[in-house]
Image (cartoon, rainbow over all chains, first blue to last red; front, side):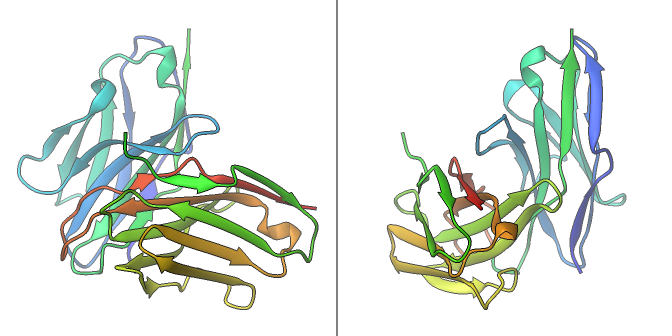
Length: 114
Length: 116
């Protein structure tokens, strides 16, 4: 069965420090990969996506992620975080040839401290 | 500014009552998802539709939940009868999908349901 695993449920970090949020997936078919962010009491907003091509993708708010097919990972990174980055981050996959079903990981709560 | 619109934003109801949540997908989007978010389970896919036809509703408790798309501009999720364990935030999302293209899904603001 296909699944998405976010390895850290909570990541505390100081402002201006770098951060990496980890995501691994399991699938027998090719996938498209996404990172979404959810601010308190809000819906989910797309940060970035990998569909094909370059394995390093850049998104909004200075975030980037790298697709590693051999390790089935899609880790999210930011070189310097701000207080405003405090939010819940979700990794998600859409399975190729599976009707576009979108499966989410459990989420990582990023807490940026001054 | 295209967006997915969900109503109501908040709903408090008594156990046993019927609850209907509505979603207006972005114009031109042909795929609609319903998710439920709780602290314990995270984001669970309840059902999704392509061109108004259900593709997968295996995540939905069939005895009390039902999802429909009466037309391309409206998706509904009903719970009858509601139970306290249904308390959660319900999200609708829409996407434009052709074949297996991986366009992203756009999410609504959610309906926060509390069943007392």
